[in-house]
Amino acid sequence: MEATKKLKKSVLIRQRKEQEKAQVGGASTAKLLNCPTSPRKMRLVVDLIRGEKVETALYILKHTGKEAAARVEKLLLSAIKNWEASNEGASLENSALFVKEISVGGGRQLKRLRPAPQGRGYRIRKRSNHVTLVVDSLNNVNN
Image (cartoon, rainbow, N blue to C red; front, top):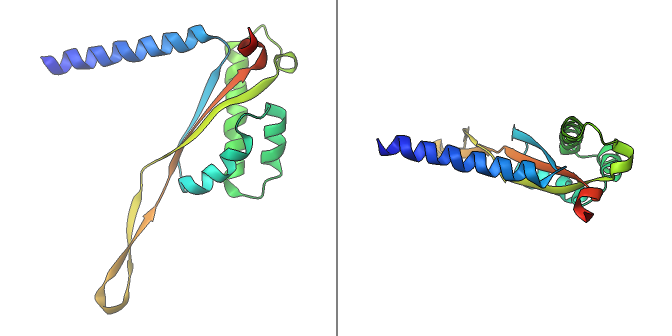
């Protein structure tokens, strides 16, 4: 009986948080889950674009040689499309979009064994990560 109450309460809390985010205005979010790159390698790319304008961030990602840059570029384009969908009246050129928040968290790890000398086995951890990207308009931040 209590488990259902806790579940309902958590659902209410989640809905309340989503409503607060919706009231804030123009910010839109995109998430990349279980990306098969180690979080450390992804953070190197993500740190390049944090706080940058969207046009500058796209240029940086386009000309970065890392494999993770292509995945982050696709995520940034998705966040821009999400912003356009939520702000239908506003134009993309006049809004001055920028990367408000971007964070990388560790995802699940695939654990494998590699044969080692003298009958031992070394564990290999194939890491993945989760990336969360928030895009917002400078006009909304100033108001």
